[in-house]
Image 1 (cartoon, rainbow, N blue to C red):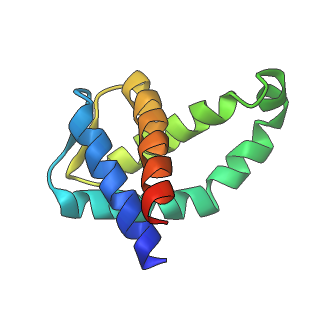
Image 2 (image 1 turned 45 degrees about the horizontal axis):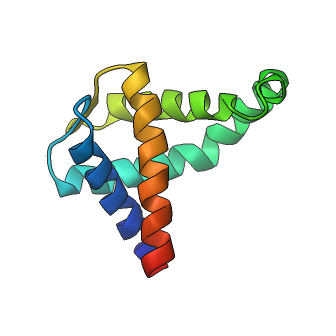
Length: 109
């Protein structure tokens, strides 16, 4: 579990470093962002997915990316050292972070 948290923290930090519209203060901020994203994904995301099930079905599951971006914007409001400039950057952050995280888990997981 700690290993997964570390890999997610690295993916948050790497993604924020790659994207101009996302700022992260330091690696400790990335650790907090990864932890908060995990908590939000466990408790809030399932509720949002159930509530948005009709539109998720109509968009063939692509609306889940919108939910992810919304949750990233929520975490942005909660962590001082993490700033996402717009919803579009949050959408891109979610996509790039998932790719980087997948690669890291393929290599180290």
